[in-house]
Amino acid sequence: MILPAFGDPQEETGVLGNVMLTTEAISTFGDSGAIAVQEPQARIIGHVVAGVPATSDYEGYSVIQDLRYQLNQFSARLTE
Image (tube, rainbow, N blue to C red):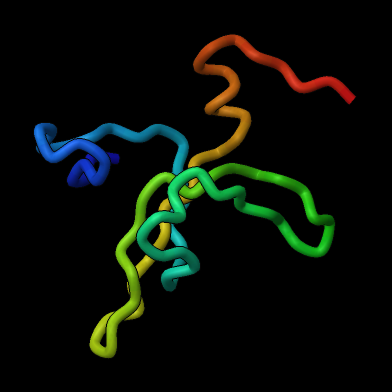
């Protein structure tokens, strides 16, 4: 997925892998890095990495990146 870069005004685009788009905004400005939790198990499944906030005319959306994908990018593993 390619989308406008939010964090660095010098960058025009960013590339994200293994992401999910929500059907409406579940985050707002400043929420990048917040955990995404699968209910009812309360299992962490990823992090908010981008989004478009809701307005009176548009429901917006949030972009959630898969936790396993993030960990695999630097060969990390979770242990129980």
